[in-house]
Length: 380
Image (cartoon, rainbow, N blue to C red):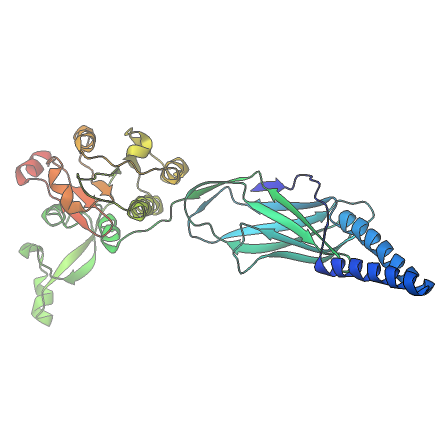
């Protein structure tokens, strides 16, 4: 948790319309009392002026030594609710404070802020809120203000502050159904590999025959009983790791809107979280890592990668040489995910043919680039 404390400042009370009305009334009473020689009216006018001076003093002292404490997480995901605690403390030794309002920019507009009718000296009041931050990156000390119209609403005191806390906002995780299905199937997508070796796991049950299943896998006794084709279903072992490559290929003359890039970053974030949830190690590279492969051996510790994604900036490139070099240099035969905000149709066919599955992903489509049969046999 991080804490932010209001810094001391000197804001003078501002007279409200009610206070201005009292000033006008006191002036009129003094003038009229002097004209008609009525001392009582003059005394009432002078008393009103005294009340104004006393109210000014109380208004200034009322917000003196009021401290606000923020408790927020160090990092959150964009668009997701998080807990936010706001605490008001009266640091004065003797004097109580009244009618204190705190308006915080972290809070949604509907919440507005925290209102305290009465705070005893050397005591605190706290309240929990739920809020969210839209966008990603590093939020540096959002502002807030303290207001009070005590006493009698004659003066209004406003103290504006900016916190010192830093909040890291990770991209909002998103995944398409196609990506979820591909990760769940071990990164094999709709490739031929899933059918050529679809019995290398533990038997976990049976299912209806599907296109691509081998005839020798059919359970003939079940067919004799039901007249329907069933095959054994296998619990596939998860891959040892994934490689994630992100690029912003932009063909000449093609416009890519910023929100499309943000959506693609969200896809990468969702894919990383799915690797974490399934315990799959991975490595990732892209413009945000300066094309250096960042390897995550323990998928529970992904904060460094998420921080890179939080600060990622759109860097469109009209060529795919760097992406091809990265793919060619990858050792092993584990599945690869290549993600981009550009349409898969504009770049998938330009990637090199490799003896591994390459899952090409954009904001709407996942297309598995199948290895050539001769390459697959050689690897096997």
